[in-house]
View (cartoon, helix red, strand yellow):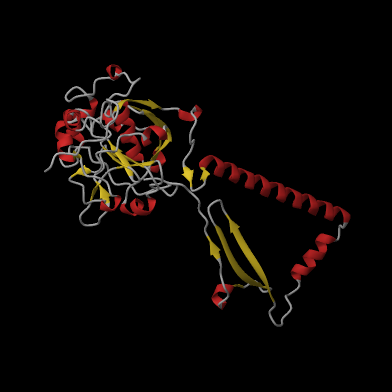
Length: 368
């Protein structure tokens, strides 16, 4: 295989102002809780919402994760981040207009535990379907990298590698089973500055030929086997993650503060539901007051209704009246028309061949 083409000139790593000597030493095995993917430390449950701040050579990138979107995936990210898995690791696959991928540990003794081909106990995460509230692989959303199942073509064997969608990839990745559960909420400019000169990883050149990238990046198996030493010797221009902080209470931090529900957050949906309950309650109270006032003004009113109830319905041709029933929700508008007869029967206009209309309007931005 030919040697990688030289990258365009760029400042040496780390860039000016980044003190690499302050980076913590990456973990090794034995000696780290990361060495046992099935151990108690790696099975700790993540907060419902938490942030992971990646301190990279181009700046800080804040990622927000929502456990409801993918519990197993969120728990894995939380534990990997707090135990230092990503410290000093390379940003080894940056494809402008598609994705930026990372997640092979700096030390090969650790990355070997999460190499899906070795199938270490507890390393491979169970597949998780996309949550109904997920924005999918929209721009700046994050999913686990995975291999493809030869039988189904679906993504599987997730362990520790992640990718950031640099554009909206929901149309090409959602159906393949890449479950997005986190999003870049600050530091997008730092992501855009990650070095992309090596292009696609060697050995994956045929995956996305339509992208037009060169194919001079690291080879996956060698990256797992040699770690950051391989990057230092053969791909020195790649940017790195220096170290990672975990913020378990990101409520006071600028950025998205809830799961995007295709245009509405959980908080706004909850307030809307409360408002509807209040409106319905007030309406019922007003109708009750009016009825009480009417009975006081006309004591015979209730007797008239009682007499009408005791009288049999008049026989004769059935008359109908059209009733349009409309249901509104934050996510969809459903329209249906029905006919209600005086004798209590209900007929659907659809069953009579009448036109039915339905619209579902959804607006969202997304990334892979």
